[in-house]
Amino acid sequence: MSSRPEVQAPPEIFYNDVEARKYTSSSRIMEIQAKLSERALELLALPDDGVPRLLLDIGCGSGLSGETLSENGHQWFGLDISQSMLDVALEREVEGDLLLSDMGQGLGLRPGVMDGAISISAVQWLCNADRTSHDPRLRLKAFFGSLYRCLARGARAVFQLYPENLAQRELILSFAMRAGFAGGMVVDFPHSTKRRKEYLVLTCGPPSISTSVPKGKGEDGESCSEDESSDDEAEQTVCISDRHRPRKKQKLTKKGKGREWILRKKEQKRRRGDEVPLDTKYTARKRKPRF
Image (cartoon, rainbow, N blue to C red):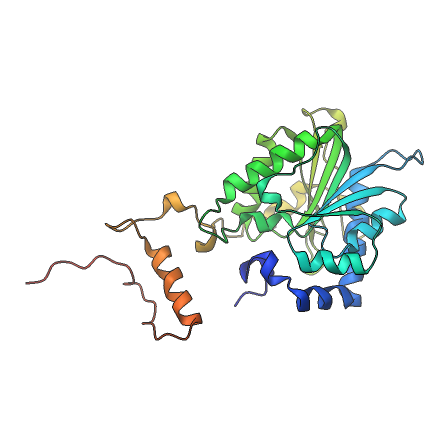
């Protein structure tokens, strides 16, 4: 099974009470979160005038990224879909205001109230269809549309994310552009397997000189452009895994139940301990009439 959390279970289930406390008590995770949050705050490019800004932390979890915002003198508002994560944040007495919310259903915030937004390792969860009612494209549209409305004009949003492949990365970027944002991807350490980090940097408003995408960091500490990392990414497979494939593109059987539906039902029976035939290339294939 993949080690990526988003392909194991929905976030509200994966980050249960045990996982939430384990996540927050890990000194390694706390250090990584602090570095990612500092970099996201740097890419926000807020004016250095000593005036606190009101920022939005999307997928705030237990408040690790929010602590970085507080340490830099800003006020913040955090939302997360995991009640267990927010409970830990309350126990830790973080300074931000917290809201239990599914970002895929849109952000219920007043227009133009936020001076910026950050998100650490959260946006790629929107590409999953964890329920039959979930359509990744509709969820991305609702999220970026509502985010655009709640940001002040000219404000930035910075998302550190782990796209599963190029297709997922392009899907996220395309819906951000459709919502009206200007910007693009910033890749730090593009030639390093362990240190490579991707940030989606968006500006609320049409493209201009002020909305140009900053350059990523290189191995020598110098900035490097996105073009320098494009050769490596061209070798990756451009595809969407079966779990993320849009429902309308699935080949349906006569009763309207396609291969993905049958495989999902078989997996549910396996989890209940039922005996289920092995999956093969013939699973869900229509049989020819025999005489």
